Length: 286
Image 1 (cartoon, rainbow, N blue to C red):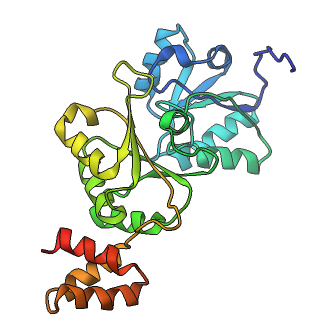
Image 2: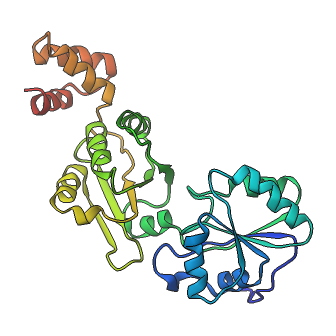
Image 3: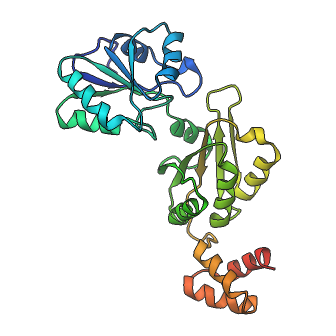
């Protein structure tokens, strides 16, 4: 193992610096050293980052780089880098660019040959995955879900038969509706893990079949406070999966036909199991 302990910064270098997602003790010594030495810290929210820097006694100048100004500020920062300054990029919490700003800046730097140095560090999706109990050998990070119900259902339909563990970020004020949409598309038996307030005092990692999770969340609103990571077990061949289109179709046909007849027609159209569709109809349409 190589012992690389130098923390001297290079000139004309962009550093990608992860910051704690909750517990301030998770920041690395290397991250602190770089934040202390660089000429500028490009931060998603300078006020939020300012509290972090103040806690560690770091006085480095900050500049706002967020979703609304990144393209404009990227050119300004690249010019500063080309004159020999060095810059650290941070987000509000976790690793920059992971559902946070920074893509345009990093891409622009690489296009013009500016050195980009990434630091390892906190990341909510990896932290949640490591403790979820779901398969971690193959997973797909899908970022934030669409804000509207139709968009969420379309997304769940798209990934319903993906065999990988699926990871999403979601906000507390949408989580109830999101779980309801997920239940409608994926069914009650799919294993889902909700991870919230990771590394913080009220950290919760709870995994049960989706139908039970909806009930568990509804019992106590405190269970949905804070930043949330949702992890969904991947699809396994042989599962009784019903696409949203199939349930919509049988519901429509059942208005005009006996349920059994509606099920037979729908099962042929969508190549799904008749017994599974009939059971769904009995539970949801009678």
